Amino acid sequence: MIHYDLRCGAGHAFDSWFKDSEAFESQARAGFVECPVCGSKDVAKQLMAPAIPKKSRSRPKAEVPAPAVPPAEAPPAQAVSGPVPAQLVALLQRMRSEIEKKCDYVGRDFAEEARRIHRGESERGGIYGEASEAEAEALRDEGIEVARIPWVPLAD
Image (cartoon, rainbow, N blue to C red; front, side):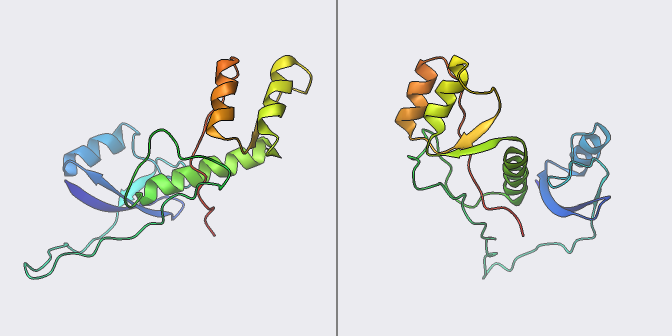
């Protein structure tokens, strides 16, 4: 596996792993390599120094903060442990930003508002807020589509 530092045409820096240099080239040509910040497919490898650790010392691992889970939520059924790759954090930040722009925040009234929308009592539209795992499961049982996403802090 090869770790590349990458940069998009807009100047955003990020990194990614590839099987080998040909894997990067073929994925980039096919449009599968994109900037996690702006979505640009104009991505190039950056000049990198080789990472050759001495046998007596191991390389330190980069620490990325784990996604924050709002206190009102129970832990998800599936969880990830350890550092979260920077690309994934950036993607989750982009998703959160889009949700906040295009959906209405309803806070702890999420379950009831979702039911009102489902019954046609409220205007149909995207909402987000807090719901316990039990509330989310009850909504699913009623045929109301809900999804949980990791709510990571937005980038500065």
